[in-house]
Image (cartoon, rainbow over all chains, first blue to last red):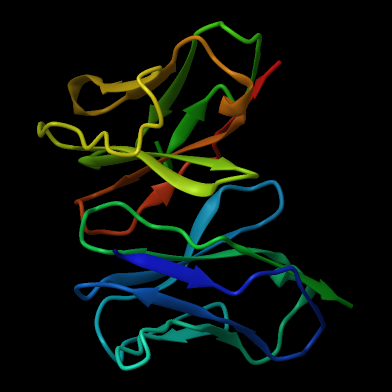
Length: 111
Length: 113
């Protein structure tokens, strides 16, 4: 069946480090792909999305590219900031209207 | 309103009591979703409403859980005879159509003692 696998956390990085959070999926079709972020004490917010192969979603310096050949949607940022500390969720929509969330990756950035 | 509104923000109840959680979606959004976020299970889908169609209840964990959406707007999630394992944050989301971006409320944190 359709599923998503997300890199387990927690992840701790120094400020200005490069970030990658891996996300892969298994699907019978072609899902829309989303990354959501949950900042401390706040609700879930959409970070970025991609709806078809080779699309690149980007926002706040974060990027993720829809890779059909590797069924992946890895989240990257070239230089993280303390304010990026949050929990990140990979969330495909497999076409049945609801989001399927990964386990979440807690990111902590140290000054 | 400007965003999805959920109430109450926190709810503490005793085991066996019934609780009602409310969600006000973004005005004009036809699709409404309920999810649950718990330590053991992560973020999981509960139920989905789209316009006047029959809701997708496939994620409800037991028959103690039910939800309704009145007038295509406000939704209420009801948990009967609450159990300690129901303790979680209940999240509501809405979108302008079924395939669009889902916007989430801040959630209701339910604690069952």
